[in-house]
Structure formats: structure tokens, C-alpha cells
Length: 157
Ligand SMILES: [Zn+2]
Picture 1 (tube, rainbow, N blue to C red):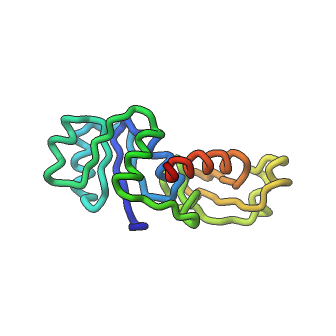
Picture 2: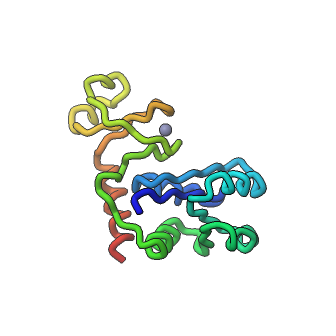
């Protein structure tokens, strides 16, 4: 069950980011039509589709694993998905993916990225991950801890 993958429709950008933070593969495109999305789904039919489009849901529900998301708030959306699929929080996987592009992050040594890490962060944080595609560095700082507390609450409810 650790290998869940998700395909989200264009209305679910925030949810896609949260799912990536948890370490799951969440494929999301904000610039494609539902026709294009359906083609993509047919090529990745092992993934769970999340949509807020009732018509789209009705059309696909016999063929694919698809969940209709009622709420327009990410917290309620995530709670619904977690409950429905009985997702578990896996500490190792948290922050293992880039929230922008969904790539797997690599753990890096801060010495090698001194140029792009803000000084105050460099002094206080020791854990860093890097997205090679976006060339973006992530660190475990107060923001991360805050997001994590938020997400943990959802799993507890
Ligand atoms: Zn990235």
C-alpha cells in the first residue's frame, strides 16, 4: 500500500501538493482537458483518480479506481482520501517528493549547496533534500514542522 499513486484533476492542485508532501506519487496537470486527462488515466490505470467533476466521475467509475471529492477545501479532501483508502503516515516517506514536480528528492549535504541556502537556514538546519529537476532545495525547518503537525492532525481524526 506504500505504492499508491494518484492522478488528480485540475481543480485539486492543493491536494496534490499535500499528497506529495506525504511522499505519495501524485500526478497533477493544471493545463489539460478532461479528454486528455482520460487518455493519461488509461495509460496509468493502476493509479487512483481523484476528481471534483461529477460527470467525469460517473463516466469513469466502472473502468477505473476513481474517487469523487465533494469538498472544495484541501483539509476535508485529504481527510476523505485518508479515510477512504486507509492511508497511513509513513515517516520515512514524508518530504521525499518535490511538491512542485512530484520527482523523488535526494538527500544532500548542505556544504554543497551553500550558495542557494539562505544564511539563517544554513546555520540552523542540517537536513536537506534536493529536486534535480526544479533545482530546488528543501530543508527541515519550522515551516516543514508546521505543515507536518497540520497533516498529522488529519490522520488522527
Ligand atoms: Zn521538482
